[in-house]
Image 1 (cartoon, rainbow over the protein chains, first blue to last red):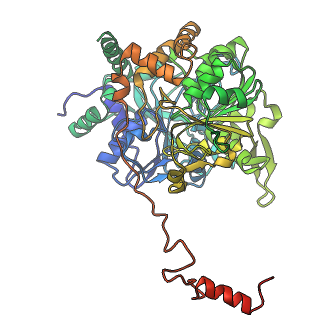
Image 2 (cartoon, rainbow over the protein chains, first blue to last red; image 1 turned 135 degrees about the vertical axis):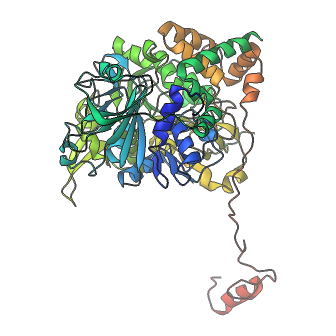
Amino acid sequence: MSKPYTLQELLVIAVAKEIHDHENVILGVGLPTTAGAVAKALYAPNATLMMESGIIDFEPLLPLNHIADAHSCRGFSYATDLFSAFTMTYRGFVDVCFLGVGQVDKYGNLNTTAIGDYYKPTMRLPGSGGAADFISYAKRTVLTMLGGNFVNKLDYFTSPGYLEGGDSRDNTGLFPKGTGPTMLLSTKGLFRFDPVTKEMYLAQIHPRVTVEDVKKDVPWDLKIAPDLSETPHPTDEEIDFIRCFAPAMSAGRELSMELTIVNMMKMLKA
Amino acid sequence: MVDVNSKIMSAKEAINRFVRDGDALVIGNYTVGSCAELVYEVIRQGRKGLTLYSQSGIFDVETIVGAGCVDRLVTTYCLRAGGKKGGSAVERALNAGTLEIEDYTNFQYNARLMAGMHGFSYIQVLEGAMVTDLFKKRSFMGEDKFRVIKCPYTGKDHLTVPAANPDVCIVHVQRADKFGNAQYWGALGSVAAAALASKRIVVSCEEIVEHDVIQSSPHLTLIPAYRVDAVIEVPWGANPTEVLGYYNMDMFMYGLFMMSDATADGLKAWMDEWVFGCENRAAYIDHYIQKFGSKMLDGIRAKAFYSAPANYGSAFTSRWDREGKERNMGMTLPEFEQTLKERGKLYE
């Protein structure tokens, strides 16, 4: 029996396992960078970690603040520019990339731009950043959804998943065949895409969550894998690594922010 | 004595001379080490009607939009403070109808500047985006946000974007010389393209160095002197963001900003204190230390991790060897001149 872990630690490990040895990996901020560090340290020592700002082949010593954070490593192997980071993706040199989700539909199409009307948004989200181009040309894309929503129709279509499902993505002729999202991780479960219909289905469920809990958030009739399994508990080695490397990630955003603000107030008074 | 070759001046003078109302202004930094002092000076001087290009908007875009300097924003990414319950100056301005936004992907945005930098009128971008709302939903760029053309070689449809040549780029770098040679290292992002696409370039730097330093490390020079209009030495010029080799991100100051940015009143109060309340960066740092002590800033100073020097040396630096003989022809200068005379090469 492994030692107690947090949900965040379980999520990081689930994402880290999507990185295989010798792969070229584009990391996004937050959970994916921590996952990248875990993978590099524990399972994929020969993976090349990259960021779109042009920081290529780095070993993070700290969790990164953002995708241009060269302060979190001690040098790196290749300093290129953003333009070249995308053209190398276009040419097929990126095996896997990681994107966050605002809204997602059943075929893995994404909205990270706006909720409500685009021109007068109820909520302005960050925007595309690199997302639309990465999911178009990376061989695989892993989606991490910590605060987003499943919807039938996106308020704004930022980044292409499998479009209308089936062969529709490949048939446009705009994307390398076989590319697209391969996994979506939420705080309740892990989803994959049917190889034929390209519809998202529930493949793994996190501890303490029921299928009904998952279905409650999904507006379409979510299909469940016949061999649905529980997301594996992290090992002691995995837990120790994350807690030491990125303690705030172990705590989760809310708790770590709360503790940080309390500490800031204390510093201000002193 | 006035040094006619020097472009060194204050931020106040540089913004006054080179940034005008109605300009297309590009913030050259991308996510890291933003030119905070130059942005704040644009705000303090009350520029209006700007079209702002920003690859990735952080506190810089929030403050300049919050101050009402910007009518149009070309971007790929906006900051949001306080999560779902929070907000941003960009969101508030969109809803108030005082700001129009044109969304691109990171690559498309960078490609527009890359085309501008190289003098092309348009450039090919990655065609996958044609199926998305980035392509379909357009704002002030209208038909010219994207055009689809046929590749003359393959017959395939190519997605293209028009070149961007902003009127002026403001950018912060690690170091520069007085002539304007600007050296930047770390996450290269789109810094070079943003600067070199622009008609005027205002550079702030952590330190001004001797020209010798630049000459022995030209691989670090992203912006050459002949393109630069102004150089401003501004230590801590990117705070609360970070500059590689100088200081880390200031989580404390960034935290104060983020707590304020979620509402218009909060942002205004923060700017009254930290932008309008400090006439320049030196005053800002003084105010910071007076209010919070120097512990916070001292704690984020970078420790050194130097790049291995590249050897720019060569075998010799003169055509004449130690015996005073020309290295190929094997004669001294008097012998050489004698030969020129004998061969009838010299005009009397």
